Length: 334
Ligand code: SF4
Image (cartoon, rainbow, N blue to C red; front, side):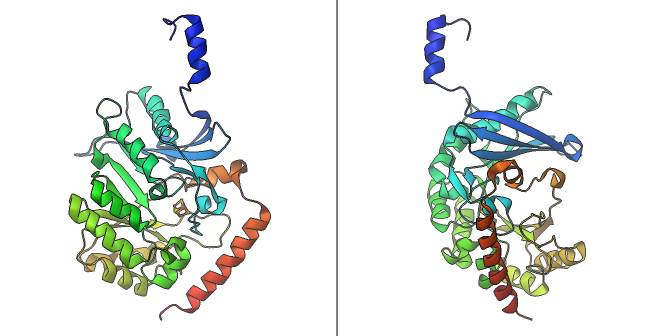
């Protein structure tokens, strides 16, 4: 702002920040279609965001989707997730959330593109930081600022029932995504530990109420882990849970993470799983994972760059997982 007097510029620089991201390192993948950034915040916390470009094809315009973080780390502790392994750092404020989108918007502007979609699927549980997420989404959907349509904002939750109920009252017309990962309560207790506090049946009821209030189909995300949650019995349980609801299921082969021995489901298990859901009248897609080679599953870059917990924490978690996983598998039907 060189049109302002020097002393005023100095005073402004002392009192305000133009950007909450101190430093960002970018890694490309997928021949440049996916890029992942690791951002360092003012207090040294690390968060990640991802840009995914989808070239235009017949009848569809080119899209640029930015996946952003709402917290540094995460307290939910899903065992297949690198962020869960990091533990919880702190909530981000609205500016820190919006600045991740601004970061990619500036890079896209160089090639004449703009951000078309924003998904809260990075680090953290957005509905446990809902006030900041609402404030950030208000900025992103404000016509005078980013001007995104509400339908181009997706918020993904691991199942915070009170947060979903609050959204149903507010009706922001976002797309709601629920991380399902298992329909059987005993297995979901292991894969999404929040299930012990907010059981899956209540989560799905709350999500259906949101769908009814907004007319927006709920997207259920299902990370597929080889031999753990990809059996015909698991598919039947999901079909029973979601049959007749305004729902869409996304099957996502798991991103391998260093701290578990779990592997992605093989295609010969994913296809029959999808067929069971489609047979129950549930719209189902199989998502191609993007950016595996840059650790695009959230938390992987932060873990590499010094965000990893102490070895003792990792060891305790691994022992807990092994016990919990063994108990779950021992209790599997069939
Ligand atoms: S999957 Fe989401 S809710 Fe679960 S630990 Fe990772 S960031 Fe948290």
